Length: 88
Image 1 (spheres, rainbow, N blue to C red):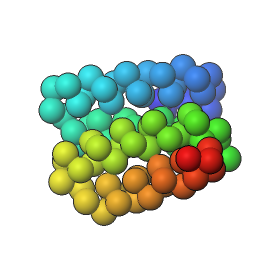
Image 2: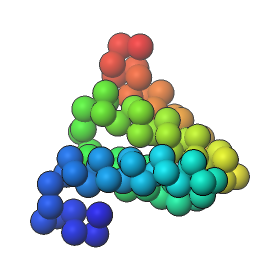
Image 3: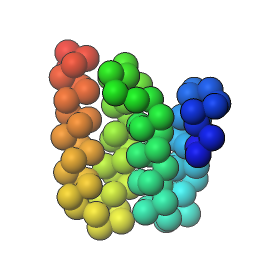
Image 4: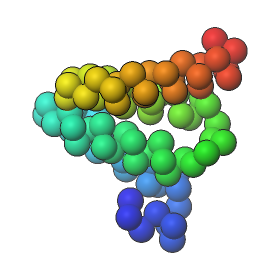
């Protein structure tokens, strides 16, 4: 993901999301949260809320499991904003 400016965003997001899911499956929640955050960052500001929402929920879940409660609150607040933007 460090090579993101030179590479395709979609590939970076897909790899980060897969890595995050794997990290969660082996209980590496801090790593999962970091990877979800990288995926959200890769999408950039103004990204489609439908693409951001599941990543933000994943970030919130991973951060909660890691005991990072402020990060959890921020992620879920952002996910709620994305859901509102989708009309949910």
